[in-house]
Every structure is written in structure tokens, then in C-alpha cells.
Length: 387
Image (cartoon, rainbow, N blue to C red; front, top):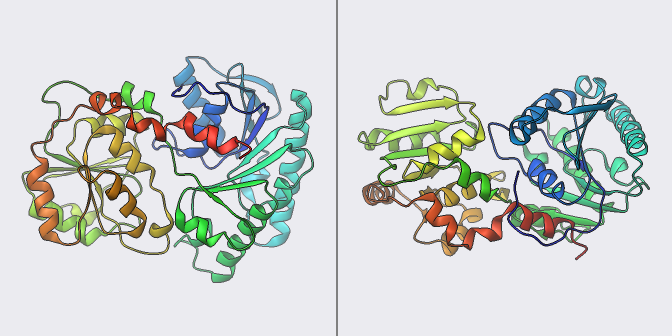
């Protein structure tokens, strides 16, 4: 499915305790690393039951074949990649609170993982964990090494109003970091928050460059005056700013990819909500647009994030307009001609005025070679290295 660097990963096998696979509608770091590792070594992806069918669908489309069932919950996706779907009880019980439920789920997962590793006849696999809520699972003696990849501020979700539950999330993440041999975080904000008892390394997100090339629409004149926002439609968005941008630029089309219709935008004729679409569709829309939008509010969550959409935007060749967040300024410094930090509506007006002439082909951008530093295999090499 991918392949941007030919260096060798440390000896396997590997087990990935994966995050929820939002694919095919979004990019996903845990699946990227699973895919990259699987190009060289046997690797098992562990997920909850409702996620398993999504992953099978992804790999059926990418590899052109169906999975092979090897046992209860266990499937072979190809010669190196395996999938373990956990027992249904893991979907039914709370994972954090109450503590008795969390411990029961943890025991179920530990038993399932042990049994599967034995069935596969693997010895001392390397663990790559995206789960933060089961430090006792990470500390099991069966692992040769333990890598904790922190890709989100799990303890700060706005949908969790209970401060005690939020603190419990943080305590579990901190304990998981403590029992790991290596901790990496996708942003400086996450590094700072977890630096109490460990020394996390900064390792930003990645992008599958070959997939971008395959999905892009290339050719002269393919870009139109379209501004794209790709991603979740939630509390991190500055909806008032976004509505004002739509109002001030009636000659531009606004494509909100990944979002369902919002009544606040129903009276605009230049807005289209795409809903939940495959990731390849996101890349195709970006390759035909001229602006990528990051109109976020400033809060603890956005300041601790390393947004995957930034790499999608950069690789697709759109001009990026973003609100002024500390977590985004490095991108502006690295790509000042492409990544614009905008502090007021006049600066946003200038962006839309100038971006109408941009007609960069995605393939031209990728051929330059600079984006290779963000390739998925490059990240996988850094992630599992012993350094």
C-alpha cells in the first residue's frame, strides 16, 4: 500500500494496539504505522469489534483480496499483516470509568492478545501502543520493547465534562508512558504535558505520499476557486469566522469534506457539505482546489495538536490559510509561501484575492522531494528505532 523509504526496520514481529480506524474517511496514524511495518515484518493490529469490518474493507480495497480467518477474531490480511478483533464485551463495557469495568476489559484484552501471539507462534514481539487506558497491558512481560505513540490529547476531550474522568484519563496516559521503553508525541504541547516522569520525543504525524499521487487529479487548469476544509466539524472550529469567510467570498466555492450539513450555512449557495467520504476523495478534492482552511479557535486541545490535514494540504499543493495558533507557527516558518497565518479578516481577504491564480499540480509538488521527511515509512523508522 505504501513505500517511501527503503531502510530496514528493527527486527519484528510487532503488535499495534490501534486507535479507532476512521478510515476510509480520514487519515489514521495507527493504520499508517501498521501498514508501514507490514511491508517488512509480521505485524498484528488489535482493535475493537466495530472497527474490524472497516479495516478489512480498507485492505480488501488496497490489496485486492479478502482476509483469511485463522481463529476466533483473528484474520490474515496478507503475508505479513494480521488483524485481531477483540471479544464483543470490549465494545459493551466502559473503558475508563468505573475502575472495575476498566480492569475487566483489560483482563479480556490481555488474554486475547496472549492467546493470539501463542497461536501465531511469535516470540517477544515489539509493542506499538496507541491506547493509553491500559498501562498494565503495556507493562506485560511478553513484549521485547514497548513504544507509546501519543497522537492526541486524550485527557482533554470537550465531550467529557467530568473533570475527575478527565484526570483519570491523564493519570492512565502518564502511567502508560512511565511503563513504556519509548514515548513519542506528535506535538510540543503533548511533549510538555507528559514530561513529568518521562522524556517523550517529538515525532510529528506522517502522510502516505504514494497514495496522494494516486488520488490526485493532475493536469493544466484542474484547480478551481474552491476552498476546502477537511476534517471533523466540532468545537475546535471557529464557525463564526468560517461563515464570515463564506459571506465575503461569494465567487468562491467552499467544500466542507467530512462534515454533515449545518443549518448555520444553509442560506449560502456557495457551500457544499460532503459528509463522510473516503480519504481518497478528500485528496482528489484537494488536488482540484486552491485553498485549504484551518479556521480553529485557540484552546488547550488545538494548541496540543499536530493536525494530519496540514500534510494533506501541503502534499496537495493548496495555499493554506490558518488562524494564529502557537502549534501552527512552525509550519508558517517552514513554508511561508504556502502556509499563511492570518490574524484578521483583512489578511483573510488578501489570501482569497491572491490564491485565485494558484495552479500548482500535486505531482509537481511531490516530485520536489521535500515532503519525503513526512512519509509514513520515514515516521515508522523513527517510531520503532531504539534511539
